[in-house]
Length: 367
Image 1 (tube, rainbow, N blue to C red):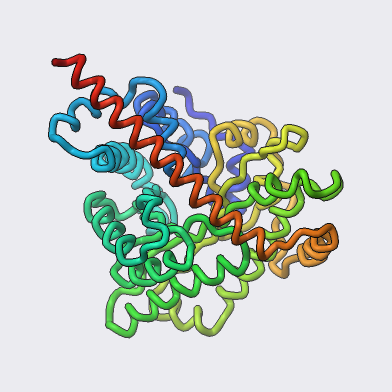
Image 2: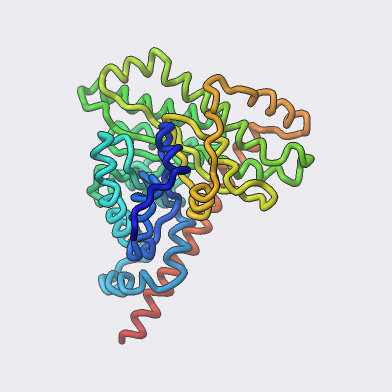
């Protein structure tokens, strides 16, 4: 494949924003698609979730040989899944390893999520995170933990234990701050214990689901504006945290920032620009993880017009307008987090059922 670095995606990279792909499949790895994104589109990391794996494994036959091989060991569907996911993600991690090394661990990461069934169980999440981190045996693999109430406890303990964490399912400034403080507590405990404070983390704010949730409740002028406003307020809190004496003390001790990551940045409204959230959320020292379709759209016609203001800009005024429209953003943030967790749980159950079905069918056909 001829190398031709895309100018549009390169501009985001040069701005200081990492562009990650929100997808993984064995097909992407086998066909060299991921390698192409790395070489030509300035993609420097990757995220996954149960829905992504459910689609990848449930469709096509790229996993059949591996499922048949692993099924002969008598493993459960969940054990089979994590074996398959680790095969994919360690391969992807190795592709990103040059980026990881060149940036001294700032970039070049992949992510694996703990079972969504553990979202409300901190102790089991902590155990699963440590186990998956050890099984992956890659320095550039994040363990994804949801930013729920139980999740924040698991984040702090996992960071203290030296497990790199991608905090997922964050929907508001307040949820982000809670996750950031859990990260800080974990690092502070490491410093107090004389341990290396350089344990990496990212905090993933989901953007487009806000606009999907209110689309039928607000008049057209308000559509596709709420997610960006919430993001702007969260970015302000992120910048304030990085300038705080608490953080600067940890940075002096050798800690590295928990980077803010924009997630769910594919446009859901067909009437809106397909690069809406990527263009709106251009900002240094952040990450945007985007679906393949959105990556391709931005590479084709995306523009870097302006960067997010560090002071929140007009976001608070926009939020006040939504409140006048009857939107309770605090209650909606809590609902979106619950719905997100339930959606991943549904995908997880479908995924395990599909793996079980495939393993049974493959065993019968080889008998």
